Amino acid sequence: MTSTREDDKKTIPDVIVDKTRNCSYQRLRFFGKGGFAKCYEIQHTATKEVFAGKIVPKSMMTKASHREKMAQEISIHRSLCHKHVVGFHSFFEDSANIYIVLELCKRRSLMELHKRRNAITEPETRYFMHQILEGVQYLHSRRIIHRDLKLGNLFLDDELHVKIGDFGLASRIEYEGERKQTVCGTPNYIAPEILTRKGHSLEVDIWSLGCIMYTLLVGTPPFETSSLKDTYKRIKECEYRIPSTLRKPAMEMIVMQLQEEPANRPSVTKLLQHQFFTSGIMPAALPPSCLTTAPRTDQLEKL
Ligand SMILES: CC[C@@H]1C(=O)N(C)c2cncnc2N1C1CCCC1
Image (cartoon, rainbow, N blue to C red):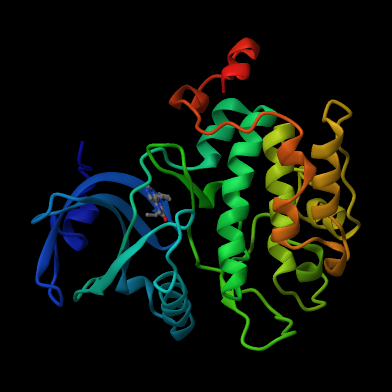
């Protein structure tokens, strides 16, 4: 069902033309907004292949800082190629918009799964965390900090494979030992060293991974409060609680990732070797039913 959004009819055409590559796309389903962008399913006219189109009106790119951030996102994302990173197909512009053509993730993201399921099972968490860690291992091996790892940026394709996306806050480490001073934007699972401006690096992604693993297993984020100020206070004090219902390997792995001191957090490679992944069932695949209902215990054995 294509959107009947009148305002889009003016600025975003039904047929999007990429003049440089001499090809066009049919604008299909509206997916939603992502920052300045309006996101649509788009279909390549010649090959019929479908993609996710991120469309940013140039009228939104008024400040040089916005253009530079967009250029940085494109520069980093287009340099990546990994099974657990959202595929970057192409980007182009016309008089009205900038278009980014990305891999289509039909099952949306872990955010939608979390909203539907709340806490998921340990085997499901092993399945998702292992893929997320492999994707982050690839980013870190290329000296890239994602800086905004969160459920909404962990997309799912038709086979429920995880694809890390949205490099809007990502940054490259230019030299060995570099500590970044600022982030332009507000990461969701923000690490304490960013809040206290102590300088930060790859370890901020490990902190976010700890928040993601906690949220998947417990059903709520570790530092959530009713106000952002209080949440930031608890992050800076590293104040969180792990329910005793969690089994030991999962609890230990979360505690390792949520170390206040960045140097005390393990690398992604270390996390991939953690006993959590061998202390129970690691499903080779998950059925689409996992998006809506918990697998029954006896079914778990089969997972
Ligand atoms: C196109 C933006 C974003 C995205 O980055 N990908 C890869 C994606 C891929 N497939 C579906 N949706 C995607 N999204 C959604 C659209 C609305 C909010 C985030």
